[in-house]
Length: 225
Image (cartoon, rainbow, N blue to C red; front, side, top):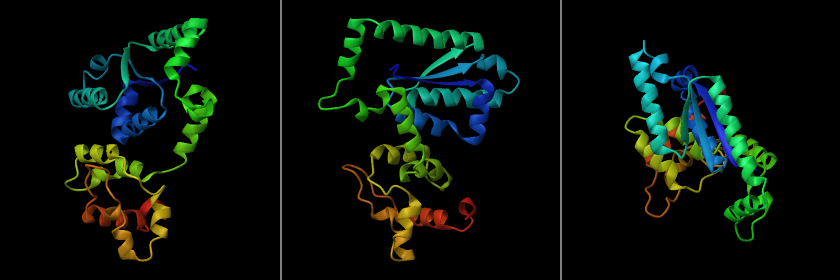
């Protein structure tokens, strides 16, 4: 009912997320929650914590600036765990006070209302339904998710191109493993992505990228298979 998701990271966590490239994936899952308020709490002062490492300081600032521009995340800075706790409490208190009145609840429900919809059809209306939806989503690896995680290694494919592909809304198979096992020949597998019809105004996936991803995800070395 809070319709809120908050991700807390210390500056050290941010550095780790930069090193293992987790942040784009976490931002994706937060966006997929459907919550109207998606807050990203950065705990501790970035400049002071990374004063001795100017290179990493620049990378962290670049990451935070990118999140502001490319996502709907609201970034809030706190100096310590005590301030983070106060922030959490304030969010709960504010939402609780609003939903605890007849007018406040009526206003919230009216704002959330979608014609012919049900509570079960809107996973973020209750925590249990949102949790169920998120677990189901994390249990499926979509082709778009794999593009987001893997295309950056391709020569000549930049982040702008990746973002364009992800936002284009391709209708794709649920997973590469299932898709590639159904192709009648190796050649068809190489052309699988290139044959996916693009959305209106979009571009086809090139044959070169299609072949590369087929070779990548069907290689015996991939994921230990």
